[in-house]
Image 1: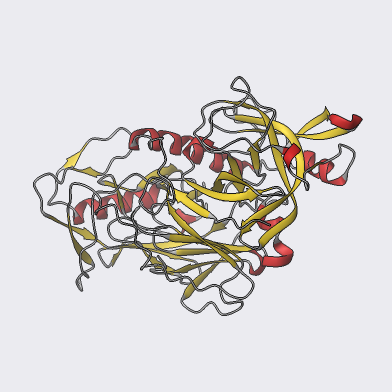
Image 2: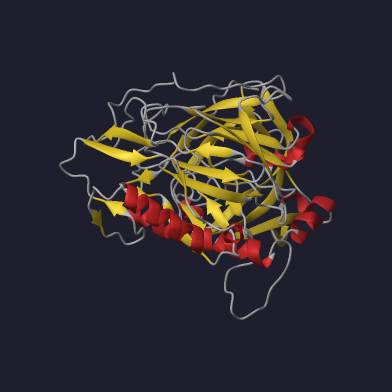
Length: 466
């Protein structure tokens, strides 16, 4: 297999702070404001990757930052646009979890969300470059913990049936290991049973091929042939017989990526397909700034040695999503008053949701405590978020530390300020009633190694991993 570097890239908009040295005993950190992110110099010095013998680890970098191997010509969408798509995605995810939609069909008139997989695919923020086929062809794929079935755009596919992408389309005819999955197989029947089936298609060679079809919450659709191929994750590391969708027909708003890599918990995902090797575990660390690097890893770090992590039980009431229970929040070193029932809906951990979606009672308490701690700075209106500030004229801003506690006592301190504020706004929104699920967004996850260890039924967090 040809040597192929694997890069995971972030579309996180540039943030306007750099972290100052240290904090104080009262739970506040002073940070200097700057006009833009520090100079465009890639730094990997902060990465603290601790892989084991049974893991594969790859660098994770900002798509538009200096760590990217080539500079992308497309620009990130505006903060407001990303938040609008973020809300559509989170609404879809919470509807699926609360209604137990996976693997079922629904005809209730009050819900118009498709039964197939999908949040708002256009709100996803991370991509990874992998090799597909033999010889390996580079493909830039969105990574998504809220999706299962992976897919790429494939030849033949012209401008009327596929959206433009930066890289050449995957060409199955040039791969010696590509094979469409026949219609009358267990793999195809299982795909249909999990609501991703697209019927049978007439393929070359006279055999009926298994079709796939996915409709996302933002109206995007992808359809094509369910296929089998070799997936190169890193030099010398390949997944044989990887099942994915070879897309021939795309609809809806899309970016210049080549497809999607599903990291959810259903059988079609990369995580489950590689569980015999990596134990159904993976982790990542999202850097605070686009000039810093992070990583994506399959497997449990250092085998059974996970010192440095704090763990909380994983709840699997729905196959795709990873859910934990939050039990408390502190702001500026003080616990806020939130009764336990306020967190009863659980929290989905999601790589594609930008700002955290928090239940009504907990959100109101957090908002009040944060606004009180930031009373020295003027609030400004925002279309999507209700706690935004104007820091014009301030050379330094004092930001309260925010910590989240989960069942079992696992507590994570959010990065200050990049894990708390996004575009000068508190990176939280109200998700709905207390008994409905919330979502832990990717802003809050910055600098943490988040370990999804489904085999052991737990989620781990390791501080300052990147």
